[in-house]
Image (cartoon, rainbow, N blue to C red; front, side):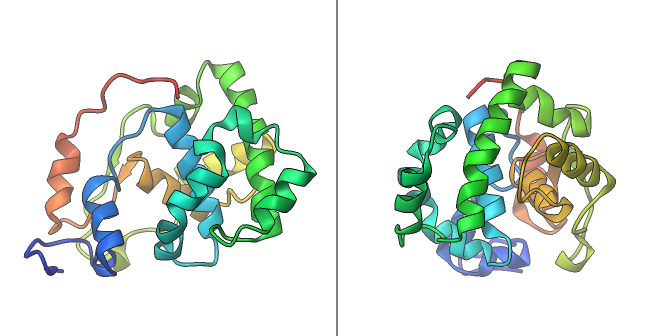
Length: 202
């Protein structure tokens, strides 16, 4: 779809300036920093049942409320902190989602300890290399794949919550484990040319 800026984008990206900016700068770009991976995992879980635009509008509030997504800090949140978060109208005030962020932070730290970094663990599901699809329309983009199925099962076995296969696949798209830009989108080839860069711990 050709947007207001004259560029051909994925159809979903034309939902407003926030969606366009996120699509043009972040979506599909390989991420290897642990803290950014944690942020996207929590935000994708928060999005369940809602629109991604809703999450984007609250993203800065989430960063403020969740200590810039430092998993070591989030893992220490107690009942009082959770009550404060549930009273914060800057985020999605769903008790299960808020509590899952704390549970997931603790599981995240356990993976870092076991694998050296969450990055080393999570990228193994695609063999360390981004997958590139060739979808012409949004309807051809899958909701899940065998890789997201395996990721979901393993994360759940490690104690993570809000990590169903559809959420896991959306996470994979967001952090560049898969390039699902439409073939006609100007970002399709740009993302393919983006160097993964050195893998860094968050």
